[in-house]
Image (tube, rainbow, N blue to C red):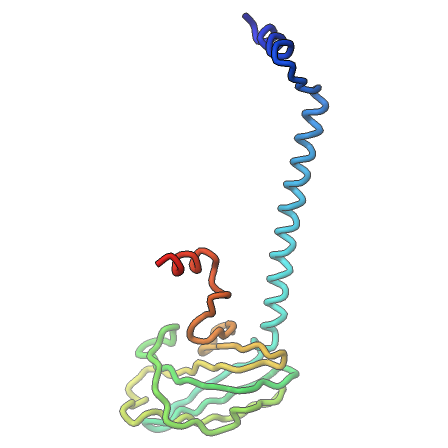
Length: 190
C-alpha cells in the first residue's frame, strides 16, 4: 500500500477535510509573521530600555572624584561636577587598597566628613576632607579611593567607586519587587 492510497483511505474514512496546500502555506505564513512581530517588538523594547538607561546615566558619568592622602588619617577628596545640573546628598565612603585600585577594596570607617555634602552645582568642584577612624593609618596602604553616592537632578540615586562607571544605587538590600521572579519564587518556597 502506498502513501497516496493510505491518505485517500484516511481522507474518505474519517471525514476529515485536510484543506489544500495553499491553506497550509497561508497558516504557516501567519504563524511566522506573528512570531517575527513578537521578536521584533521584544528587540525594540530592549533597545529603548538601554537608551533610557544611558540617558539617565548621562549626568552621573560627569561626576568624578580624585583623592589624596594627607597625613595618617585624613583623605582629601575633590569632587567635580562637570554636568549642567546640580547633584545632591553626596556621601563619600573611603576605600583603601593594598595594591592597585580595584573593586572590592577595604571599606574604612570614617569619623567626620567636612565640605559641601548637600548640594554641588553643575560646572563646579568642591573639596571634601574625610577624617578616618584613628585605628586606620592611611599611609600603610598603596592607594585610597572613595565610593561616592549622590542623587542627580532627576532624583536618581547613583554609586561610583573610584574611576569606575556609575551604577544605580539601590541601597544595601534590593526590594523584593526589584528581584527576578525566579529569586522571589525560590526565597518564597523556603
